[in-house]
Amino acid sequence: MTKKMGAQPPNAGVFSIDLDLVRKYDRPGPRYTSYPPAPHFSEAFTAGDFLREIQETNAGENLPGLSLYFHLPYCDTLCYFCGCNMIVSRNRERIARYLDYLKREVQLVRRYIAPGRKVEQLHWGGGTPTHLQPHEIRRLGLFLQEQFDFTPDAERGCEIDPRELTKDHLAALKEVGFNRLSMGVQDFNPRVQAAVNRIQPEEMTRRVIGWARELHFDSLNIDLIYGLPFQTVQSFAETVEKIIEISPDRIAVFNFAYVPWMKKHQKLIDPETLPRPEEKLRILKMTIEKLTEAGYVFIGMDHFAKPDDELSIALREKRLYRNFQGYSTHAGADLYAFGITSISQLPRIYAQNAKTEKEYYRALDGGRLPTIKGYRLNEEDLLRREVIMHLMCDFELDTRAIEQKFGINFREYFSWGLQNLEEMIADGLLRFEDGVLRVSEMGRLLIRNIALNFDGFIERKQDPMRYSRTI
Image (cartoon, rainbow, N blue to C red):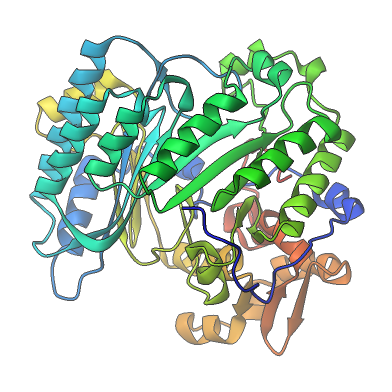
């Protein structure tokens, strides 16, 4: 898991940030883990619609592989910055009941999945999956091995929290096939940790990473967050330098989205303690420059990886993909998601599960899929999704290929967006030459701003949603 930095890809090297351009273009916008984004999902899309799509996409031959996501929502304590769908509970009976229903959902869906389809990717997210006890991890993991066929090289990742972790938790994950771990660190500074109610001493984090390496997990990702209370360029630089020393395979550096109108518990954070916008930008600049100077490849937006990591290789080979878990390397797999709030993605639909345990249990007690809303893509959505996903993942777009595939004149169809991009082109964020849009290194940082110019809802002013800022 402690891979050395290999040969540098063409886009590697120190990345210098132009703060004037960041200031100019920073605005709210979707993260485009899907198109259309989840706020456009509708309750008009029903469990019956999802079931029909499952049946239709499991007919025929040469079916794609499977990607499975399991939402394990429970946490031991509340982190004030959290934007996830989570439940604070230490009631072990409540958690055990949820796991029973999770298995029932798997069995219900599994009967409609064609035999022979293999799982290429598995992810447990939360909440805190390791809030489960080791024996619960083993039991759920073995159940999934009984229900599904996994490819020999399947990517199996789990989010972990060092604060309540034992070595047996990691041993249990390893025993049931997990080979990747993702850990939130956020910031090593004790004052910052106290302000967001996440006390996670550095030595605790290092101890857990040591266990993971002893158990030979293939890959480790560490999440950091900038924009938290009391952070400064100097204080966060100390965290970044320690993370570089730890040498994870991947690093995600997320912008803290302070959205107390959506996440009521964020009101527990005093907004006066948050770094001012200018300081926040300087923190981001310092972070990106230190990580790229240390040899990490800037994947795009907020992801970094070692040059020989699968994400970096997929970026070079234009095989990068984006779904509800962020950047991925498994393009084309059908995503089946289980548990409350989770979102499945098949070629033409998104389907989201019930958001509460009560609704979720009621549906499964009735033998129904727990879908409460979703979205069926029309031809325009499919076109715009392909354009946005190529930009988000390849950081270039061959407009001639789009014209041929969808039978359009690109310049005419996207005249609104291309007109908006003229200023970005002048600022060096991208080029449009010989029918190909190519995003610059600086443009990758602002890729959400570029992509939203191809969003039909924004163009038609049909998108009143309140998103987080792009930087």
